[in-house]
Length: 163
Length: 163
DNA sequence: CTTTATCCCATGCGATCCCATGTCAGCCCG
DNA sequence: CGGGCTGACATGGGATCGCATGGGATAAAG
Image (cartoon, rainbow over all chains, first blue to last red; front, side, top):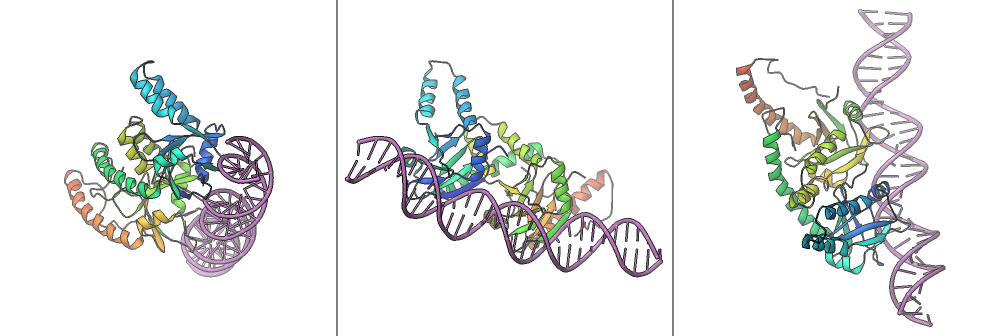
């Protein structure tokens, strides 16, 4: 497995530490782990984005696509690099979330880790639950569009959840 | 055989484990089994969808088509990756169903595995029986349409290999 | 010397592995 | 043609290991 998949919720202890789900850690190591986890506020959500080297390269890639001294590039650079923190993972697989990041995501007692393939997000559990519900209902719609185009075999009934 | 076919019903033991039907396991292995079974709540049914690498690639494929920082992608990612669980199959061909998934499908004492070709579903046996009855009646209609054009196979005795 | 961040160890629960049992079906041998 | 044998598979239980979590010790900073 080499992608961040599924969700986990872990507690923040009295010292502000949180365990990174073991499976995510495994992905990070495979991803050319360099002792650090790249983490920054999500651009459009009250959450944090995080990942390993692959994510860092992806950001580089995005910026590389924009002309050098454009406003867009400056803004994106600031938005992305500016707030990035490199969090060190301790011997027990835990990280400490700096105050600024905690504030952005309103993290308090627990953190929900959400796998998104190349990266993962960290949410305040209640907020994420809400977000998930929204995402699911929107996908229902998207799904129907896909289904209309790529209907393949079987039955005449709805029945199987084809995606 | 390289597709999931027919239905089987197995018990959930006291630890929440269920044996995957041997024939399904065989399909998974042939499918480029990477130590895990991808499983997520069916979007439109009280059941779980599951499959092997082929299914995972299908999901990746859907996401690959969307631009990196789009809303659509984020939502799909959350709905798909976020809900997906990678279930490991133990040495005896069993999996453990996490609480969240069990809840979605109302799984309790037993699970009905339903082959759907590329993937399979897991149902609470009673619910599936009901669903099957409905599907059957719809198929009757569809069958008539097919029959009108090209009479092919059998009689009305579908019957399906019951375990 | 006080305070804050990092490391290391202890613990408990849950997940995973391994082995034993029971059942059924197919096969070989009589 | 029939009966016992063997192997595959579902199922159950016990033992073990890993992981999340909490607390104290140690080192660095003010």
